[in-house]
Length: 441
Image 1 (cartoon, rainbow, N blue to C red):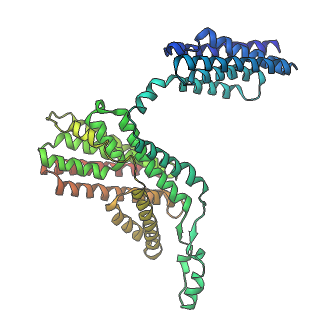
Image 2: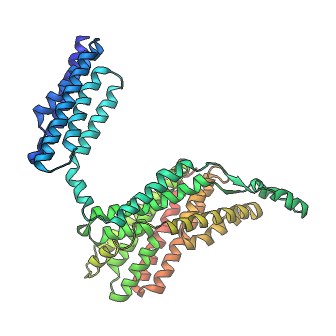
């Protein structure tokens, strides 16, 4: 028993000293509630309290805890009154230090979890300066946006039914059609909507916008034009490409803007991991060779064009434009969900009526409006309704059509040099993507 006590006491002292080191290095000023020695002693006090408790001296352990917390409350009251600072970070750090010293002795949770808790505590205490930097300048509308997203992802989503509703589930539809002499046949099993899965997509789409905004805030103006374009492409590669094409027509720049447009589309390739990963990990594994080839090719092309020396006068303007507007809008996400439902119905009907060729054609047509809905649809069908390899082939065809449509937009909205270079780059990315089929079984 004694060796166990010794080890746990040593760990308590180590944890307390580490927390005290962080507190001491953070320069808390007048409100500083102690450093290495103070926190080491607090953790040791917690350990002693734990020893008394497990050896049958619960009353003595209770007295120690009550006295400790009473002293802490008195200290906080005096300190906040004299410094006019009502913050509780240091005091909460002291409480957690006491608990970190107490837990190893009680042996009520695994030591690995205690170590993880200690790491989290130190991490939270150490990000004060970075937190202030991120929070500086956040407006009320931005706070409302974050709260709205929390409602979307954490309040609404968990309570939606994870059930697929089919045509046969519509009340009285079967009897009505039967009276009309119409049979549902194979269409009876077509899933119309799964509220939980549809709302996951809404949460993912809006979450990507929120992540893109946070990334933009962290990058700041110093991140430069290329990172700003990457953030814009992560949110919407089509709109970013169109914006860059319009700039090329206004200022005559081609190489640098083409590089930024390729970078934006590379970000959209990375976005596929977020869309597909949570829905179908097996298909993502099959898709991985083609995706990696597309990303690597896009990265090399972007570097090639971005290194071309050209005067760029729009860097600051693009960086500022990426920060304008709302963090996210629910209406486009809901519109996307509606498009997704329509795409799923059309492609499944085409699959029943015309086989695989009808499914591919309907997906190609839908890709002109974007591939996100198709990607989610393929992720749900891959390995179930269609094979993993057929889903990969469909994705490559859809991606090729989508990239071709962006090239077409660039011809209409950009200068000729931009359009030709962008089209050539998208063509090369498309050709390379089909090489990934060699690695799919």
